[in-house]
Length: 434
Image 1 (cartoon, rainbow, N blue to C red):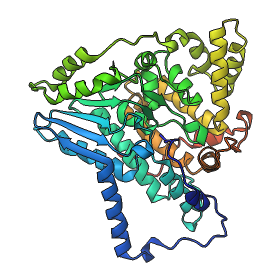
Image 2 (image 1 turned 120 degrees about the vertical axis):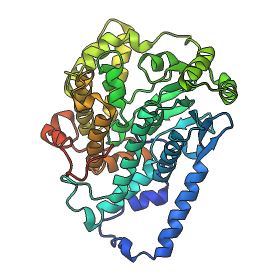
Image 3 (image 1 turned 45 degrees about the vertical axis):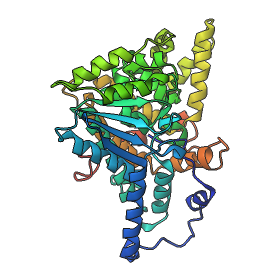
Image 4 (image 1 turned 90 degrees about the vertical axis):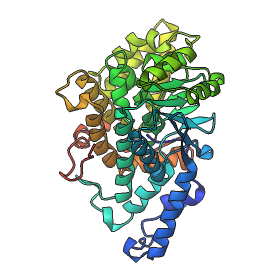
């Protein structure tokens, strides 16, 4: 969800962690209308620059993410523009398929623009508007807008009827996985680097990653492992094994693939046309999936029945294994868990466990992505105003001392009743409508 690569400058850091004695910000109603319109126009102009759309003569519609300095981190205006393209093209008979790409080989998208989100949360937490600290309602309209736009866009992508292809070349993390991982055709390369590192800044791995994990081998254990530890996936074989990718295409062939797509004469079945084209370009990874080899210990350590504390206990046992590969994996996983906020780890385990247990049960709302996104909306609004988030941003992105002071500080100190409260319904008119 969050782009750990979106850095917060010193000027922003000063405003983020200033004293509560600082004068309150002026009411929005006192801001001159001309300034509101000016800033809105500036934001819209920036979104037009960062998210570009074009329909080619043969019916291929292309979205190009072009914010390379921020690794294509997505803000609210970019989310809205992206979805507007999809909405328009969905009903346009001249559009046969959608291709999403990046202007840079460094990154497809590093996720949400965390700088803006953190600034809005901290700004609102310092005003009288949010003194009640989000009991059952989120009182920060800007944050509500961001999560509503993100999660609605994810559902749109998942349900898109026309072929939707993503070239996941380079860094693809957090919301970058949300933009690609729920699409029909997910093309990875040898440069693809994926991760869900949200626990390290006091949040939780969202964007429906628990839904992806529930469908992966291991009954959700691999998803929980990746989500809780923030482990990076750089192997095409592993990405294909867990379903984050559908086709492996070497990066040197992406240009030719795009040219072939743009010259395709589409039939009445565009999906068949796209699948035939991709078959000609996909390659088999040179290595075998490491995650498949480690699946037994991943299941024993991160199965749906394991609490966060039990996962740590099991990993400590694995770290003493006579199998060097297993021992190294366990130590690496323990190091990943140590970076996460204890509350976030318990929250993540509960969430992923519930989604995994619901997989395949059509009567359970969590067996569908829309149901998962509705639940994650509740979790996101509540967990994003916890103090752990501000502390995680400080430690990882601002001061960069990598030494966050989490509250609670240990897994043993986490109040599971508070964790459970994060899942509770919002007000009747406050739920995500997808």
